[in-house]
Image 1: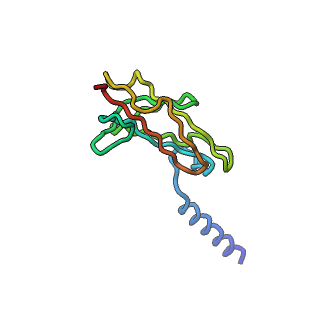
Image 2: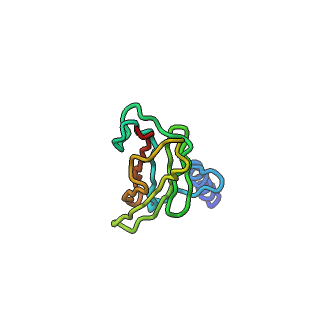
Image 3: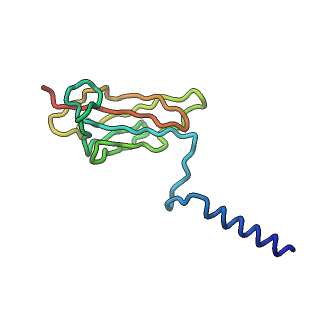
Length: 136
């Protein structure tokens, strides 16, 4: 009887291990206390500070966080800051990011605030975009 119980426990442990999501080597599970930031640096052709239809992202632009992390936009101008901050309880926190204007394409100037701030809430994602254009 003891061997049957031991076999059932081993089987349950094996099933639980298979059901658990696999993480890449060195990766930690996402904490629901963290807040993430996604965003884009885009070509703001009309200078209104909003990404309108047809305004594409700017690749290779550096964006900095208060912790000194430098993020470079992808080929579509997008960036992502995983676990950007751990906001205080239900109050949340402010998170500031800044575009390194030296990394903008030649002739481009920002059309949005720099630095810019977004409010973070634990377990949520926030969006922060930066517009840039060639002055007319």
